[in-house]
Image (cartoon, rainbow, N blue to C red; front, side, top):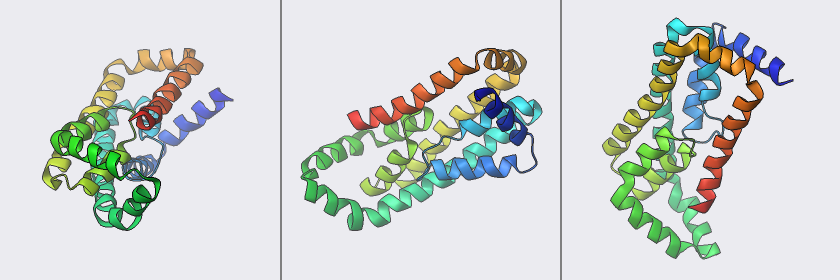
Length: 192
């Protein structure tokens, strides 16, 4: 079943509409969607290696734009939705503690979340809610997301055939590692 899913994803990645799907997923993942764009970026670069840099650019640009939507959600809707819930559950004090840490290290939070499997949308929304400078937010997002997507695209571009062979021979292992990283990001969120 995993092999059929992999082959199906590769066939979609070769399609004309794949860049639109990548942009849509990257945009949505930065503000509300739980699935990272790497799920499309990786098979797209494997399928069309010469377009690796274009795909990384699409993922970066749309991810930063989606992050700006997340920032807006945090800035515009936080007081109406989240603050009453925090007060109701008695988390106002913890929220203030996290806010003071975020005020000091906001750039690093955005940068770290943009590079890792940590749910990036949490930080984009928090950035808006905590009033992180929008230019700082955009810069940190742009740098971290570009680094993430261009490194993935670069590795696949330069080592694509060998990586494709590795992935295809060890598909179960690659899938398991990916899921552990994805779930680990959500677990880290619960710990923090």
